[in-house]
Image (cartoon, rainbow, N blue to C red; front, top):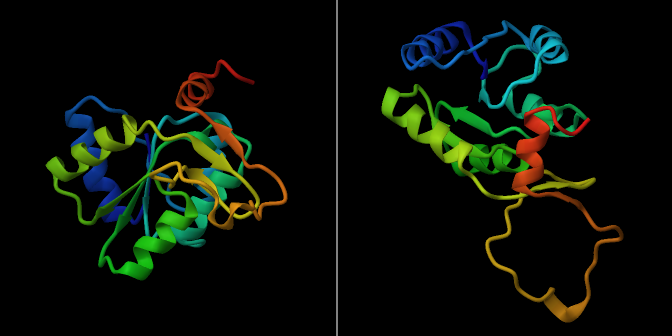
Amino acid sequence: MLALGNDQASSSLKDMMLRQRIGVVTPVNNRDAVEMMLDHTYNMLVIDEHFPDLGGIDFCRFIRLTSSPMAVAPIIFGIHEPDQKKVMAARDAGATKIAVMPFSFTTLMKSIEAAATDTRSIVQHTSYNGPDRRTRMAPVPGGVDRRRTEPTIIDRATQLSILRGENS
């Protein structure tokens, strides 16, 4: 797991996870995180909204736009003072799960479990990259699809295969 946040939040998260024998890496800034992602593949990301330099929202969006395996990894996005605008921004950036910070151990474990078992496909398109937000399959309003191109849909089985390094 790659945890991206301020030093105090990252340290607390790392301590909680180590007690559960879950490996956590905590880079200090965006450049450090990108270097770590070039060397290793992480199967889950936790991003703090106050991540240094680029900020959590922009870094979440950046991850979803890369061609690395982390583009399909579950992302837990931590928000310190949630409001509708921040939640919508995190969702639009491609967060899988949004959690209120600081995390309690129980809250974090529930978020990890929810993100890890999320069965939604990943949608990759010019205007959005992240978990499929459609909750029901309904006919296109007015009967005409306005999209010029169909989005790429990566199903859950393919996501897991990518994270295991089976699809290059």
